[in-house]
Amino acid sequence: MSIVRVTDADSGEFTSALKELSIYFGRLSEKKGRDLTYNLLTYGCQLNEADSEKLSGMMASMGLVKAEDSGNELAPADVVVMNTCSVRENADKHLFGNLGVFKTAKKDDPDMIIAVCGCMMKVPANVEKVRKSFPYVDLVFDSQQIHKFPEFLREAVSTGKQVARVGDIDYIADDDFFPIDRQRKFRALVPIMYGCDNFCGYCIVPYARGRERSRDFDKIKAELEELAALGYKEVMLLGQNVNSYGKGNADGKKFADVLRMASDCGFAHVRFMSSHPKDLSDEVIELMGERDNIEKHLHLAMQSGSDSCLKRMNRPYTIKDFYMIADLFREKVEGGSLTTDIIVGFPGETDEEFEDTLKAVEYCKFDAAFTFQYSVRPGTAAEKLPDRVPQDVVTERFGRLLELQNALAAESNQKKVGQTCRVLIEGISKQGEGTYTGRTISNHLVNFTIPEDITICGDASLEGRLAMVRIDRARPYSVDGVMESLIDE
Ligand code: SF4
Image (cartoon, rainbow, N blue to C red; front, side, top):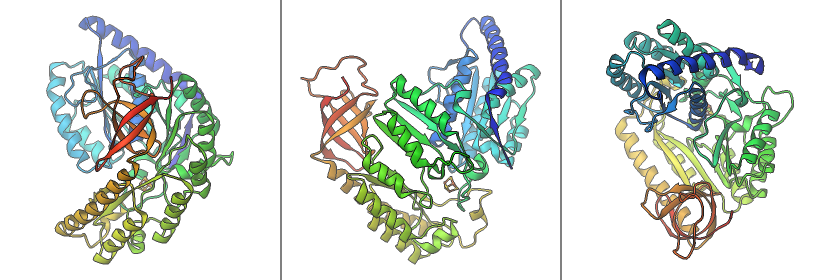
């Protein structure tokens, strides 16, 4: 597998393909007497969301307009792009079901374009199935070749034939290569690295997103400075394993350097995701404690509390190593929240191993956890492991874990009651009119109301504003409060 850096020198074809497509869609739009629209369906993690912001930016440059209900699988559009994820269970059924639905739409309008990309298109069996069973799909390409989307699309449009471009090269194209259509006006997603070298037994990501490769430090810096100047309040530094940032780069910069630099840019919140226990440095934890604008939230996947189970998962740390990190985090990051991922029922998981997981959860007192029942991902090492855990045993263990973790999450939320916290507002809450939602720097979800004597100027949604909120009630997964003041007037 080779890694290829995409540079400005490669932008010629990219730009001319965008131009030619904008002429093509312009003519089609005239013929139809209306704007042409696109519907972009994004599944999976924030890295896929970041890819979709680029796809969206490219389609806007082609003269396409985002469909009113873009993201809704049923929204009609002239161009439909499905950015798939292979991590979620049943992702394949979902994709193939949707492609079946689009068949009628394509029959009614042969000019319609259907493209499928993302992690699932790195799995040869999925690509073959799309090619054979869904011949009306115009374009298939994998997540590493997103910078070639305009060229592939131009080929599909000009030949009228299905184009499938799935390769074994891991590209790294810098963000300044793309027009990016950021989805949130206050939060910018900034990938700092791509791919993963860890090959955890249950995970498809290293196969789908390729080998680990880090962006240039100076390019990240330039992008962050620009985002800060544009007024973004929050930046989310993304990578499958941000703590091993820099591997293979000549300048010797580590993740702590990126974090410090992002903090210096002056964002209100600097967040990052994801972290692997084997690569997390003490320096990163120290920075989290020292800097006011670096999040006081560490999401660190534990996966199991048993050393033998971790070994089978190919997770190279012991539970004692994990405890040391948890202890250091609690000591250095005052008021911080520690969250995790846990898999129940990994092949061969014994009663004792599961009891070790419960003990570890008790020890670490996670503020929140994503808990999963193991399910096999074709192509991963765990697929071949013997001793599958019977479903009734998995269900029983999962219930016990959930009960324990829910109690810990409620405890964590309860501790917030009585405190006044700085909240970055995300908009109107789903709880109903007059209620807003946002997050603290410890990533606690806060729903709050505004007293009548506070007058709000500007955008009524308050999206991206900073407020002080007094917390007066804990719920299982969030807290409620009342705003005391806006602090960014
Ligand atoms: S660190 Fe493990 S779980 Fe995370 S993306 Fe890499 S292989 Fe998957």
